[in-house]
Image (cartoon, rainbow, N blue to C red; front, side, top):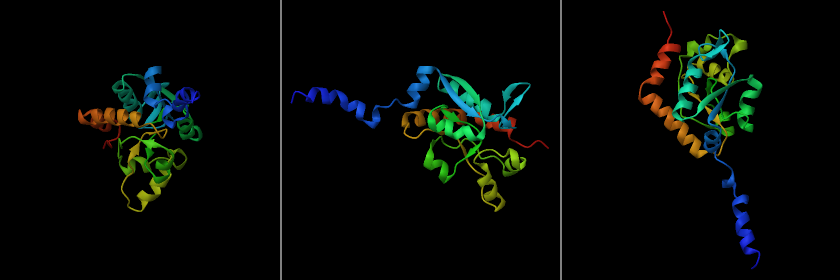
Length: 188
């Protein structure tokens, strides 16, 4: 019986719920670490040495909605999702299509875009974004365009709710549509 108080004190440490929620880490740091490749206009790319594109502006808006700053980290395809999985990055915003394989490894935001298949398929084979090659094959068979999502580590329901709420506010007030018109609509 004398060990009971000590045991009770240890229970929270043994609980899987004892780990910090991603949203708490982000708030403590005051920044949202966003991984991207910066090599695929109009989604995310470098222009005059600065990051630009649809997803760069979306990341800035999401961070502002979460009341933190956006910290973009340019990385390569090999590190993008593994870095999110390991906690090196909080999210990846890199025109990543929702797939069953992605859903097994990550939790994701609600879809933020369903771009025109021609916009995605027009990319050179070597520059096709991560996770999109499967979607291009499906599109060639007349399947619908992929839904783009933001992956993050599994087991962060408070972060998912915060991210989805921020995304919903950006959609509801028309900012997402303005971004899409600016970056993703084909100009004749």
